[in-house]
Image (cartoon, rainbow, N blue to C red):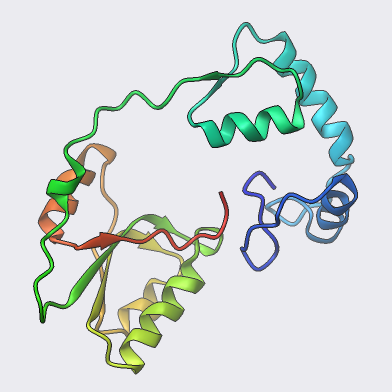
Length: 182
């Protein structure tokens, strides 16, 4: 359960080993299959892999901190992702008084990535007549439910290299990541 989530998709808080084992016993792996070993055994096995690596990289300080927590003393080098990004501020449309706020949601949004939460937000905005429109650049595991909402547009799959062009074309004011895990 590498996403550190509970059954409802929320962040588990990373409990001590006993809490992890109870969760794994109750939920199993991501396919619902039983997990045959304790979290301590799993961590010990992966500690051997990590300690035998020439180098261990983490893409952010947050990931490096988490690795150091579970594998004390392990030298972890910070190496952010190397992609060059466009000026992200140029992708956000200016918000003017009276505009409907366009919210970008990127990727394949399934339960673990917050599809239920996003659907609840969209339904709530529609029910309360809030000036919010959700632009899903990708797809969801609930496309049919989203298709019934007039304040949601699903653009469908895209190639990774197209994402910034798609964002620019959608003229969204902000982006939303509906998952509740690190």
